[in-house]
Length: 281
Image (cartoon, rainbow, N blue to C red; front, side, top):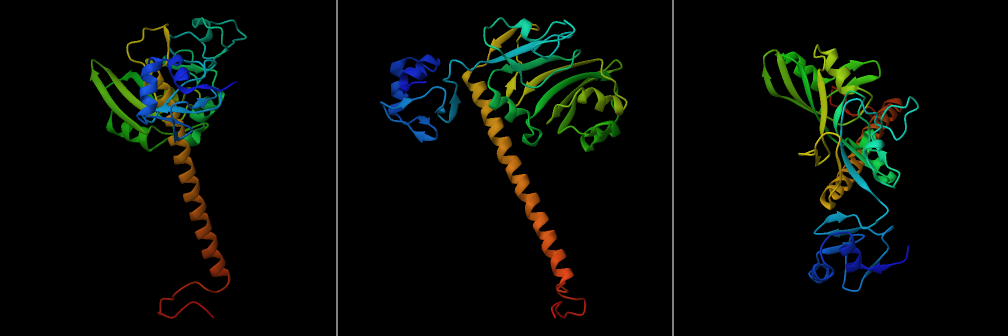
């Protein structure tokens, strides 16, 4: 894609009028690929990263980001061999969009869709630990040991499932409303985890993904994400990558330390002995 003047690209992205965008550039509030831009700078919409006041904006018109309030009974795929209604059927857009993660058939609420494969993969990778917020209607009252188990970890057939956070929003008349925050999205994970601690789910909805909230969007309706919301998703992906890299480095350091200790023991150099003498030869 050919390069275009920065203020023109910003205005086309809906940041502000071209004149106001020029003012942002002059004030040093705009960066391109991390570098402060100058008036007259040119950018490639498909390649360059543009940010205003540190907030990334979507300047590529071919990239689409959508929020849907998914109803029950709709499949979270682009196509369904059984002919059931899909989330893509609810969105009348020419671009081919794919869900960023899935909600099972009976789960409702916030579902993000996009044709930005790179961002989608970054948000969904388990090592990124991007938060998903759910509200679950379960039998009440909820016992303390169930709340503890949910956070410490519940053994499922495909591994341990645990909530990053969980709290009771409401309780009464034999029902309870829980807020459950997860950092991965295995199939029916929230339902299976809660059922395992004696809390079968009557109704489940996702209300937030990273820092993007469902808000007042009506069920079955969709809208385009705002520039701020798109930026928040990129921020979540970047923070997740940094967190994953730090965790990997810590594990590598611990592994190296263990290996060095093992090597010293095998060499007969086990460090100071109980009698105060050294462990060397």
